[in-house]
Length: 271
Image 1 (cartoon, rainbow, N blue to C red):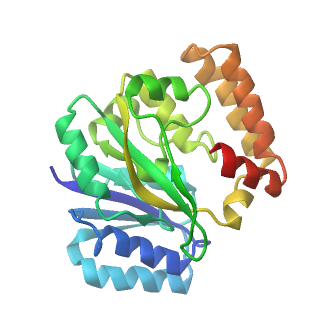
Image 2 (cartoon, rainbow, N blue to C red):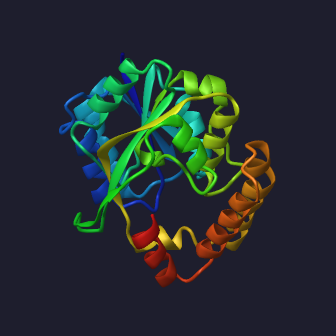
């Protein structure tokens, strides 16, 4: 089966991290993608455009660049990018993470061996601005039933680590901007509600970059309230999670609006 990679970049991203992300999905993968779809989410800095030009010369026809005239946000950008993904398997890649060398190979092999599974994620290691590991492994449940139960508390897959069958989006629908900062939560809800099958593999497939900006991006009252309402009124009701899930949703909301030093403690010990 052939593989498309889906990425989105916007003007605030770090060009050095961006370049290293490309290196990790091309030069360092045991199975290289057959297509890389990169969505330029609005105007970019000169440094980011230079990285794109560098990789356009290296990858030639492998790289498909989709340019949006203005910044529309990750969900909109990914939804647009999906229209250009040609192949059966689609891997999500963030532009500041580093992907482990066997990530694509292991996930493709897993889906080949489990034809009932629509999306598979991996464990994470968390790294800082310098690439040093600050948390060696962030584990997730492995099997569909466990993932469904886990979703009553928080997201059951690490979004930057997932590899989809294209059929997932036929069943669940595409990314939607309706829940800002929660496009992945909304996508998992759509997947569970529409009968998609989920899995993770016990392999660290992504070195996830957790910087100071990571906490700042989650400090937004309005967006946190929207996500809380979505949890309480849609996810927990439609998926029959019950009162305990409501408590978790409220606790997550309180954490999301707390000072950065509290977020750091929570992510370090409870992620």
